[in-house]
Length: 196
Image (cartoon, rainbow, N blue to C red; front, side):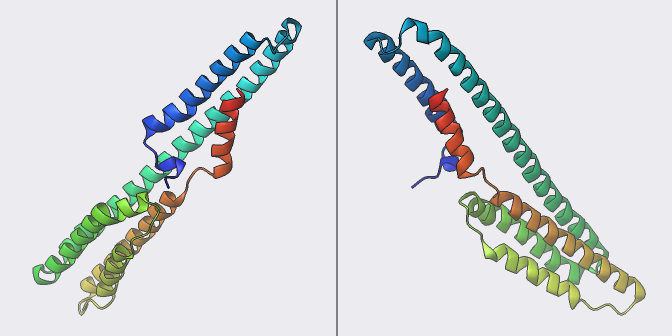
């Protein structure tokens, strides 16, 4: 069973806006045909309808703002993770080629795994632990990296910092992907559309 936020945007628009508008038009048509509304009650009903429509417009405006804020926060989390991965990859340039090449390959593998497997899993509301395991392995490799000379120790510390930044950015992205509009808000939108 699909959840409401999993539907394509066009279909969701047609269902919510088109369905509620169609139901409102049909109700008004039937009420006038059957003469359920007396002429003197139309003025009071018009004022009540205008007030209800105004409240619904405010609710829709607030919803659009909330969705936009979440979109911006998610985009920023993805940028932070991409920048952290780029910083880590660039910092690896300070290592000797035999040590650097497999570590850079592991960073590239992590990025491919995130793009190919984790993002689709997050879209479905699931979590793919394989990217987390790969990142943990990469962090562990920086802890056990040999550092005999002082500049190697500072490079190892920088690599550990960059890896920690990448982990923090990843956690932020995952937290952002878990945020959804609540069922109560969706219910209010649909019921408000029916009433307005």
